[in-house]
Length: 253
Image (cartoon, rainbow, N blue to C red):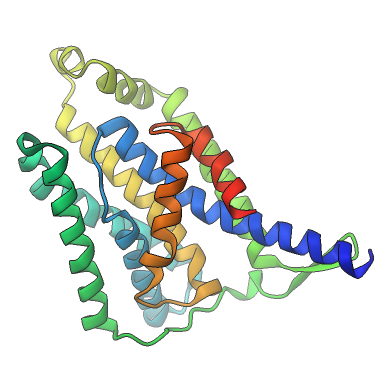
């Protein structure tokens, strides 16, 4: 492979990798906005918070895989608390109330990470298994970035199966279409929507851990990816998982 072609291929894979990170974040946004009609502007803040949680778990255990498992779950739990105790009581105030509240939560997350972890860039290493380079068609490429691409594709498959092939997914889509009818069937709609909100935040949490070894962990993470993720959702359309995937790849490239 000549140097010019190698450069284009390398940059294309870089773009796809960033697109996959964007997809993980934007899929959570499109799930929450498209299905619950909640405009959560703190979403990028949770993305950053998960990266910090992963850094802390890594400092305690030295285990990347445990950090990748626990940090998004803890972040999702924080998101579910937000939905249950702050957003749900605001339903009568409409979109403006949600926007003001979630912007405030985003500022609180930013202040929290600075107080606990400071403002310096914190190093975060990928596990030994994912270090090094892989040889692809005459090009050496980082193994970790290929892992991100594979992980995002796996998450896309799981989300598609969950939403379109399981009973829970059918209930969620039915609740979005006719909330009162599903509620009349004895299904706890508020609990269901809290779960959906948690899944959306969990997706951002996975992206936060995935990006940490590439960019390191620092307070500007939310601002760096937040606007791109919301732009993806606006272009792709609210509630479109496949649209978010395609537009994320396009933006990454």
